[in-house]
Amino acid sequence: MAFSKVRLINVSDPPQCPLPAVLGPAKHSACFSVCNERLEVDSVAALRYFVDPPPVLNVNLRDGLEGFLKLPFEDRVFKGARRLDNVFALCLDSKNSEELLKAEVVTWRGIMTKIMMGEKLDLNVSCYRGVLYLEEHSNIPFHFYNDATYTGHKFETICSAADPHDEPQVDDVNLHTLWNAAITRTFGSMNILLAGEVDCVKTGYSENPGPENYVELKTRKMDGESFTIPNWPKWAMQSHLLGTPEIFVGFPDSTGVVRSCRTFAVAENPPAQHRIDWGARVIHSLRTYCASCPENAKGILKVWRVEARKKNVDIRELHGKEIQKLNKGGVPRNGIIPISFIEGLRRKGSE
Image (cartoon, rainbow, N blue to C red):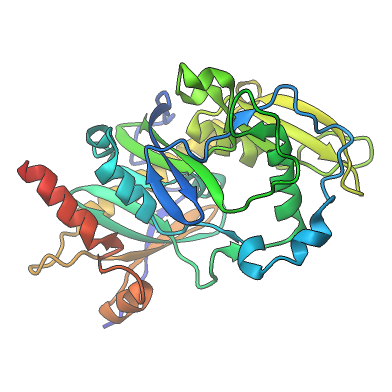
């Protein structure tokens, strides 16, 4: 049985939620480390501290690239996470589980960024107990590598250290150790949970573990003598959603040598309000639509394919075979949600 696609929202439609949309203060509610694909809940094992000032000026970020390219494929490819499984585990196992489970919308920071920026984005969505869960849909594995992957990680390695009192290990480029924060905040009338990677933190994080101590690290190839950032709106949105106040940017020349570094305060050039409003309209419409479609008599959750575009969003319910294909080879799921998570919620409810 095929289900028809429905136009959920068009930019010209009357808003169905109050505008301007307000993003409440970002609160650091939990974190997790991923070390060589192993998840560690409430762990700072992968946390790195910003080295101020970092010894990165006149460093060639391409140094070591030739040797890196000779490593086995698995050691030089970045593996991103599309599914929310690490976030589901965090919500169940974190010492701050009760607060995390108050969220009404759960997704990755990167997904919310793309929605707000109006980028072409396909999603798989399920709704359980009124909570909307969003994952990116793609038939291409989220494993990628290019020279910029190496040079970007090398820049991060030089600018940060595993201990606030350590020196950076310049040659230790590791693509498989990530530290992620889980931020809770209000978005209009909704409580949202956004998880995303944090490059490093200031030393004050040890006493005050909050987003005000997060630091985003970026590189931007110099355009002649220009230090402009054409993609600043997206950078600002990425940082703003997690509450990151500063972006430290290195500017390498065409040979890879860092010629200048600058710190940019997100608050001085924040995301445009119309982008935040569009994100609120999309998420509000999605949650309203999906929450109005109950699970069937057997408790089987629906999965919707959402096509988010710059000026509109379409939605279509997936049929059984599509869901089976989507979830093939992974952990048992109901909709896009691991059955272990649903069982964990039920156990918590009976405690």
